Length: 264
Image (cartoon, rainbow, N blue to C red; front, side, top):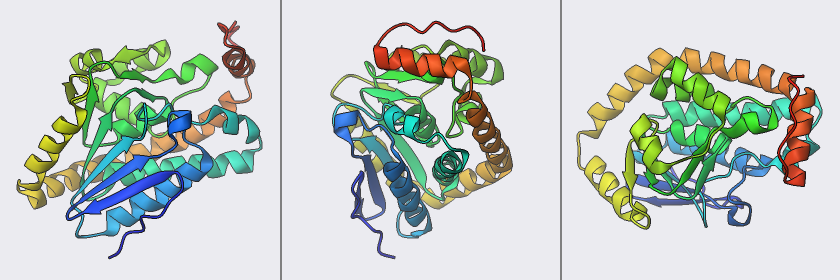
């Protein structure tokens, strides 16, 4: 199978059994607009079906992994139909990345925030530089996590810690994320590629069929729960977008000031 490698907002490089997918909107810190979401969803589905590819790497171009959803574009998609289509693309990405019969690894440098962090956590293995900035910061604009953020946070932190982390919306560095169990490996600044290559080489020279079968058994057991969470996130996010606190959060973000939330 020949995998499409010509995209505008992502880069795809295939080398033997390895595919590298790079989010490629560096000027916006790889903020995820509709085009990127649709291209990423299609690309991941192609990679999932390719039997020659055994390992998929997710990374970001420029100075960050991904700053999350593109807020400017999000403001323009106010109607329910358009918003529903966007959320469906997000769900498709999360489900495919979580359940594809490949070993998946996310390599984080700079920011991995909001939807960007949700998708990184959908990977089997997450490596981050010690000074990277990770945040599930939807709460800052009165929203809830999407992209399966609730599911992946609970898987890694447990329900209580996941809930608290989401509520706080705090930015943490790679070292703290590793200590919390949110990521799997932390490396010194500038050593990400070296550590990633070591992981890739080790994985490709291991009993991959057995590893992938284990992944399939575990993910198939939990896949219905992920799908249910994504449905709740889609419904909940639409409702949250109607709140006064969300309007205030976005306004404060644009005006670069602290929001004045009222609980409405």
